Image (tube, rainbow, N blue to C red; front, side, top):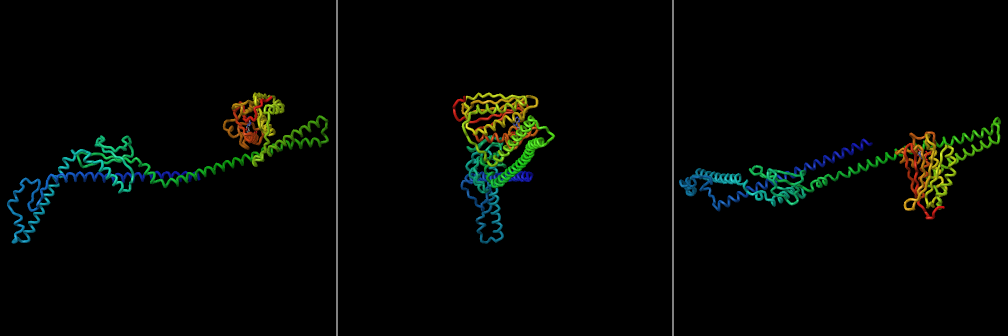
Length: 484
Ligand code: ADP
């Protein structure tokens, strides 16, 4: 599908490109034709000018074909003296043949005269046209008017600017809107190509690109829809991948959960078997050990069940929070006191740095305690094998005493940058380079984030791989009573 979409888009772009190219060529062709039209008009105007001038110079001399004179005849009048054409013409005795001959001669003379006259004009044009001032030969008003008309005849109703230059590029005339710095989009032709002195007519269309775009604009929606289709397609694929990933995470979760449930169940069942076994001596110490094991494992089992319940609550958004004012410093102190034993089991320590002067926050006590335990739990769970776990939990007033910042730091294995962004996602567990012996569901941090969000706070994490991790929670302070 991606290939099809790509090809479709590619061909559409190609088609658009060709279309623009074609329209541009069509436009250029029309403009060139219009300009040749203008050039023709100018040439005709010039011929007309010389013709008119010669006619004026003849100054009313009316030619009579029966007295033929040609302008270039030196022997003007000599031949005429010999015959009297009028007399001959009107001689009644004359036969038809000779009259016909006479008329033919008269016509021939007239033709010769006219041809001589024309040759004369052409000679003048050839000799004098180059000397005429350019503004007379190529009158800007005539160019403007005729170019406008010629363009209109070809269906091009578009504003233009033009310039007239000499053959070696010297500007003779430009319209005010002509941009001489523009090198592309200039259409030019030679004016008076058959004369000695030629000029170049250059025409620009400031709105040429817009005009061409307007003529191919109808193809844009097709292109837009293909892009929309492509985006929707990519989005669907992304959703499918996300769904697949979620399904994999859920399978992992079920596997982990089964394992987590199995261990306490088998321990409890073992303890029960021992109690049942008559060969095992049941000293008070033994009984106390077995009962404590059963007790511990039941607790563990309950915790797991609770976690699964919390998870199911996520889906239904059923986590109910009961917000009350709570002194964070005190609560943290209590939690740390309880947790100390667990860290000390691994030879580690946990330090409190409760620097916050204001520490009353508006939270649900149970969930807030759970959040702290989850973070401390993780700090021990993901401890480094090479060092004893050293945990620090600190509080501070920040943001002009409007927020309480709680930092939970450890010197554990740390989290890689790529994983950092995802650890708050449900079921997400760091898979590689992490402790494989640690079992979990990947829901602890998702729960922490959900709860902090409910408290209108924020949670961030800073971590350096193989150095340690710090979780930073910020919660709004709800009273300015200094903590005791
Ligand atoms: P779980 O611990 O059940 O895997 P969590 O949601 O609590 O799930 O944590 C998600 C992941 O974040 C863990 O798999 C772990 O790799 C990483 N993580 C959490 N806390 C820490 C920590 N303090 N140090 C290093 N890694 C951590």
